[in-house]
Length: 279
Image (tube, rainbow, N blue to C red):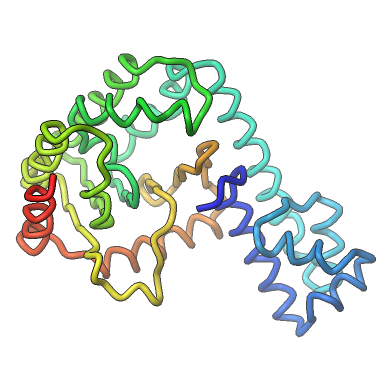
């Protein structure tokens, strides 16, 4: 995934705008001409390389005879910008404030859907794995060294796994099992722990085999969906909170496709066991 800030949400907004253009039967060049822009500006917006201004969105929707969509699209763009700035500010001011923002979601959510293509998700991690993975965090995100605090906070999320009335459906790419963030002993403990958590009545753990046909659904950024009312997406430089219904629907649909590619329960155990042998 690109390291551009909040790329996931910008790309989702770009897809919506592209849909309006194509629905009107306009080429990118024609739209650019109508809006008095260079054609490259249309391409940058549609491909998530640039976030359109409110004036850009109004010009776009007028050109596509879709001005009734303008207010919703402007709100989506504003939400992307504000949430990104807010989360970057929170991270610069420490993990405790990030936790204070995120933890209420974990406290109130009953149904969790999670996807990971890089790291074992926090609720499934053993503490040693968390510590090892965090040693690489300064290279990815500028936060103060608060590893001990973050390990304690992750422990709170792990405890949620065992609470009655909660439900977790978590899908991992098989490659997650092979990324070496720690030494052999820690990786062995972590992979063995997946057998333990997958046996919990609250957890439905699936793994997408490396041999799966990915022609329709590629690996994407890690994300969580909370009670189908909000999603959180992690990029290289920040977290993105998704609350706009159109964008949220895309992640709900995407999760459904990823889940269909995964194997669960006893069908997933051989994949974990094979990774253990290679740890």
